[in-house]
Structure formats: structure tokens, C-alpha cells
Image (cartoon, rainbow, N blue to C red; front, top):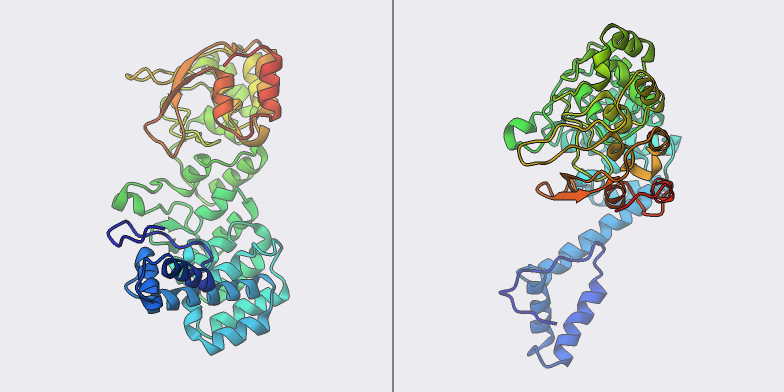
Length: 411
């Protein structure tokens, strides 16, 4: 191996092993590329960006200890957790858990094992808080992770009883209330609101870096990547009941998102042109790994994006054009039909809408230029519905892709 200290330091493995590093040093010595074992160890240390073997050794031993603590937490071994943290109080602040916020964050998330917090897990959190763990670590990281699922409400109750802040900003910018909006959990969301969470707080990081979400909790919910018409409707209802506000306040759009099809029908009866109207303000709808949004789309695009097959059927029955194109921007990007949104949902979540659109004669040959992967913001791809489905939404053998191919779709 090359150990030129002028090279960019290598990253240690996720679970580095001191014995393995010692063996690497011995290999250098045996290859006559080091004058002594101490020199070989120094070269290995520099290879991984450490000033000395001693500092590398201390770092790796610390990571091994943190790994042991995580295993004890995962096993609900409260005695071992107490023993380790009592012997070494610094472990209360160890880089562990989501965002490396600390052991209490990992305990509160109840991810391993994936289950409601047991009496032992709650006792573990109680003991940790009483003996040195910061309930506010990472900007109330423990509460943020607990708030993702309703079955963790007992953990949320414990944390709030110890002064966790329902209006905290995780890592300085992400409001705690955004967590159940991301997972679309109406019960956890209502619990936070009932305990004083502000439905209209905003992600303050946007003004600082421009990388965070600038809207309200309701905006964040609607712009999220999860898809379930029922849970979306329930969460919207919870936030509106609490005074939540949104920039997506178009009456027909909100009626569709809430599943209020009677209201949507009344709006269309009063203004038939709504079925093919384009909505330029819908900067939402990103999912499936793609950056495509709903800007310039019709209500049928919205129904396809959010998997609401009943709304899509209503719109088509009221005269919506199944092949209506979204607006095209100055660079020639856009122009997709509703089916592009349906076929790129994660794991066949858009299958029912896709089947409906295909039955209603959706054009499977249309080819447009659209935004690519969300991690490559400048990427533009040119494709048909099948081509887009092969790029985004999951495995290429999923039912949505199979259906398109059976109906003669081309890439």
C-alpha cells in the first residue's frame, strides 16, 4: 500500500479494528518500507490522517467502546449501559445515533429492536438523563427521533417531562414538528401540537445556508417524499385544526390532497375549466429519487403524484385530458404528462393510478426533457414514461415497469 503522507488521508472503516491496523504496520515492515515497527505504525497513522500512532490507537479504542455501548443499548442491557457510562461518563456525549447526537438519541429512537419503547428502554432513558445525558443533545435530537412514530409517544412523554422542547430546532434549523410530517404520522403530529408545538414555525437554516426547507410544517408535509393519500389527508387535517398555514392554499389542490372529492367536484361544477388548468406555484412533488416537481401541472398531475386514484378518476370523468402536458420552461424542461408522476413512485405506490391512466389511453410514446436525480441537481434526462420509470422509483422488475412493457411502452 502507498503511505505517502502528502496524499489525501484515507477514511477509517466504519468499525475499525486495532489488530487489523497493527497487521498493516507489520506488512510495511515485512516489505522493507519501514525502518522499524514504530516507523511502520507512524506511517499507518499518517495514512489515516493522525499525527501519531498513539492518537490513532486512542481514537480506534474509543470507537470500539462506543460500538460496545451501542450493542448494549440494542440488547436493552441496562446493567451494561449503566456500568459503561458510570465508569466513563464521557460516553454520555459519544458520537452515536442519528446525526451522531449521542446515546440518548439512539435510545429514544427505538430502532433496534424496532418496537415500541419497553419498560426497560424507558428506564434506560430515565437513568441516562438523570446521570449525565443531555435531553437537548443535537438540538433535542432524542425528541426529534422519537417523534417519527406514534408508538414512541411514551418516550416522547418521558423526554418532555424532562424538559425536552417541542419547539426546538434540531441541529439549529429543523423544527421538531417536521419529524412526524416527514413520516406522515398524524398521531405523533397531534401529540406535539397538543403539547405546544407551533404549526407555523419554520426551518431557520434556509436563511443561513439556503439548503434547508423554508416553509411551515404544512408546507413541509405536502412537499415530502412519502406517499399515502389517507395519512396525508389525516396530517393535513391535524395541522389545519391547529391553525396551520400553507402556501399551497389553492382550493382545488387542497380539496384533492385532503381527499375531499365532494368539494373538488363542486369546485369543478362551478368552474369546469379547472380540470385542465395548470398550476404554476406547486413547487412540491419530489419523490422516487427524482427532482421532478408539479410546477405547471394540472390537477391530474397532482392526483398522479400523490397516488389518489379516486381523484384521478373523478377528474378524467369530468373531462380532464389524460395527456395534458405540464408547462415547459425557457430551457425546454418539462412538458410531462400525469403518467410520468405515477410511474416513478417508490415501490409501485403509483401502480393503481398508472393502470387507470393507461386504461384511459395515456400516451406511452411521449418523450420529454425532465429533471434527473435529486442528488444531481443539474442533471436533465430525456425519456418516455418507461424510460423515466427505469431511472426512478425502485427496482426495474417492479409491477409498474412490467405493466408499461406489457402495454408496448418504449424507452
